[in-house]
Length: 381
Ligand SMILES: Cc1cc2nc3c(=O)[nH]c(=O)nc-3n(C[C@H](O)[C@H](O)[C@H](O)COP(=O)(O)O)c2cc1C
Image (tube, helix red, strand yellow):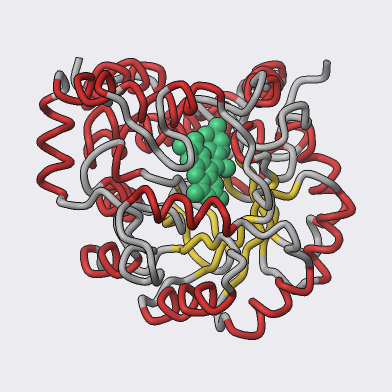
């Protein structure tokens, strides 16, 4: 099956599993430790039932909305995903183009393969940049300045990665810090010619935002080591204040799972927060994102825009999150599977699948606009 013929995100996942080398596919799919939080993200979404309504005129309806002042044709933003460019050559550029063509937004990870400048040169609309705050604040400042120079329209500061959650499979596959790919990894890549061709054509296989910008680091291995030592366990709300003082645009805090932290986010002056547990890749045993969403939306939804991510694989999932107070959802794996399955066309397919599913779910719940979604959109338990 080709990505263009996929009828659901699961199809894209299965195609990607065939096309992407095992180590990179596993890297995208896995969660941390026992993967309890990863599984809870999906299971808790699926448990929420939508309320079927009939005989309401739904002939005019729209999936359009806004977030941080930007229009979205579908309440969707592609989440920052490290090493997207190793799921498919030039992955970040292709995913950004697909997002913009579909009228949604794209977020470039600090740990991307294509750099901020690479992506900016290849797309004609501003995208968002995600920041990991490293110990080297001079480097962080330069990243922020580069994002501003590239006209990124929002800075997404990820706040849930002051230490790294462990994914067992990455260690087994040699994708740890530092990476130590084994002969079997190389053989596994060699039997996937489409992937090899795309990555060779992309000519980028290191951390684009860091290579050449971090002193004393040569290859990927030493860069990865530098990064591994750079996550800052001392990160605090004072740093958010500092970032606000040097970033001129919209600020979004990603990785909020607790009402107290959400209140702090409001006080920090951020424009939006993302309720997220990093796709089940950080604190295993943390609640699912969807179970954390309603209390946060109730507490701060009037003061700050609330976005959501974690486990979104269908349009019904999008509607569930909107019903519980999210303004928009980020998707990680759903677009990464599309990218691995078919490059730009695969990401376009992923977004189109979710858009169509959302549209049908809206019609069958008598939800004519995103603003109309609310608790009443869900069936009582
Ligand atoms: C392969 C992979 C890499 C990720 N890299 C980053 C990253 O660099 N920065 C970040 O803020 N979040 C990162 N995340 C988390 C995503 O931004 C997002 O929170 C998560 O994927 C949402 O869950 P979902 O994949 O179920 O949609 C990553 C997630 C995945 C799956």
